[in-house]
Image 1 (cartoon, chains in turn red, cyan):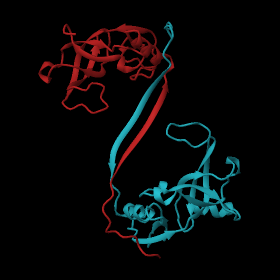
Image 2 (image 1 turned 90 degrees about the vertical axis):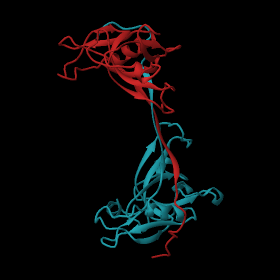
Image 3 (image 1 turned 135 degrees about the vertical axis):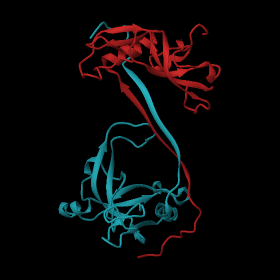
Image 4 (image 1 turned 180 degrees about the vertical axis):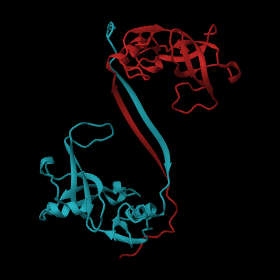
Length: 154
Length: 166
């Protein structure tokens, strides 16, 4: 047993960053979705029961059956649910107050999560019509949709 | 699958990043303050005698507090290793290189570190190694003060004994 290090030292504290820069290969279904975004189109996919999943998935989450057949949806849609963000985090791609919203695009049976820009939270409501605002430059990523905005005001 | 689009996107980058403040507990604090001065301290369990490094303040096996400070040596034994041939961002070591689990003499659990100073295909389980410290001016409260481990001229630890270490 040796002499113990002093316990009276000042408490340590350090900034830690844990970061992984994953590259994800997409497969045919998500490749179609992201290629569509690059070309200003949103694609969903049909399940065997005829529901349209957006974003598209390889399998129907309800039955496990393979999905087949892309369908273009949107660009308009309806807000199903939302949550206002008063203070965006540094990594949020919208840097002014915005809403995270579940938007069911026209022609889709499922809602997708994205940012919704509005002047203030009292401009946002469940059931409101919104539409896509495309990014100035689209490359095939989810940020190709810059955000949703209230329909008719973009 | 349906129609192909022109020039399809096949890859996306999905970064995951977590920024946080780390405050070590009492046990880790003692370890970090010691390594800042070039010493490696583990903690022993007074129930089963196991020596932990870096210490977490309690014995994972007995659940007892580990209050006995134990100074460990700079030497140890390779109990497992991997040859890394794929580059990663932020890692500037020349490929291929070896990351190994090493049990320091006197300790009962391993630490993960780099092995250098020999060809990657000479590294083996049971190999005896020694810590190479960075220049003292660069020391901080971090296990990174140890740059890597190098082989030492001692006979390998037989596999049966390594099994007990790991």
